[in-house]
Length: 561
Image (cartoon, rainbow, N blue to C red; front, side, top):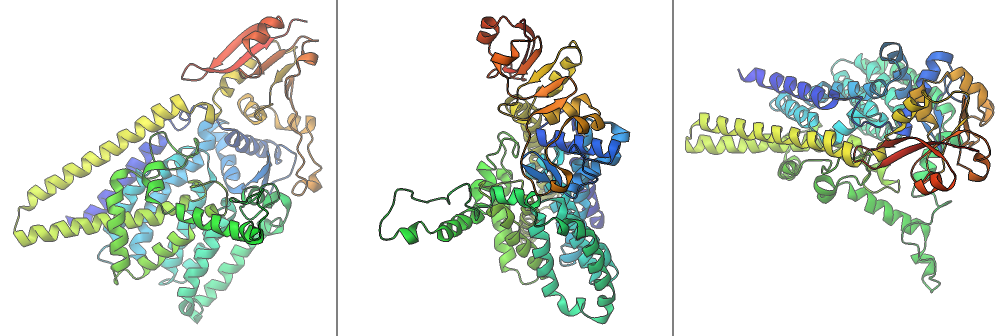
């Protein structure tokens, strides 16, 4: 009977993961953030024309707003479009799909590297923890590349450990790890560093004759996969994301703690940029290990967190502490200990070099080693209680009933907490953060007089990607009517053209002096078009779009020259 417990737990974890990530996948969040729309439309453009919105054939990284998007997620959307069409569900499906696939992968990985006594049950416990993780669920319900990249990375490391016994798996490991690197910015750091750490630990075996015949082809294949990425790796486009957020870059922002008005004798030391930046890096790095951030505060970003939820549930804190203590003391964990602790120390590095404090997006990979530690804490707690029961000859039936009741209560509590936060509070309070309203605006545009021009205000945001997405505008026509840079400067010229033409629609700031001269529709938020302006300029109110909380999202008016 006991041998079926891990498989039963794994099946439960997989079922819970599907429910928590698939339920209302394309409906919650109800809005579609501009990055989600841009990735979806570029995939649509690739399907229809083989080019992205700027007319570039199959880009290596995708030009988008002020930075460039990693390519893997966008290309994963392309084959889904003929099946599901261009919808919110479609652009979020890859994240959901690879999110649930991570459940069995983490089980198999832990089973492979943990001591035989604990491997299966620890893998199953960790899989259950991952299935209800608010951190992992958030990025499994929305269009975020980090979730997909994490799957490829973990699968690559799983095959690496399999290859220690069967060398041919080295080729599969190399393929998955090579795909992980261009899948998301953080994996450009984490995957190579962790791969190097594992290689150094097992170099004697990997360089032996039995493994070398697979290691070399694996490295060649991974190099071939990475050639496109390497070819643009030093262009301004490829480096745009890192340059804009990197704390070591001081072109546009002084380092934290810089005293502009201080000119004393210690100025060279106090305002030394490397000293200040190093201090900031250390503070940011250790913030990812802060229990206060992990269990109480969480990520401050409204799109990278759920209301009222941190990255972990508060009930997990005792098991985290127990897990750390037992992990550090144990001498029997061997490879599990090495992998988990090395992964844990490397995982926050790409997040710690950016200015955002406790960024759950860039540090998502941390969820794996932390949950392994928590799972080990739960397992140790169970074993310790079992030991006490056996010593005192207590009835096991009472213990199993208590454990079952407590576990069921915790699981139900966690699921209800997730439901209220993800499907109720997030929809009500954070609709604006997910750019709610553009779908309704697009539907309303379809009913307007097609002979009249439409101006959509972009003074505070860039709505063109959502309009292209929801209108399913012909990519070929869009490419012909819009120009930003020449194709040979695609990766190097960072200049922007924020005015976009979409048929009879133009996205630009509203200019009252010019726009009142001719008859047209004006669309904007309550700061772009106020009720006072409607009255003073004799505008006709066409429609209003409201957020779920009742506040005004967009307003549509017609001029009367």
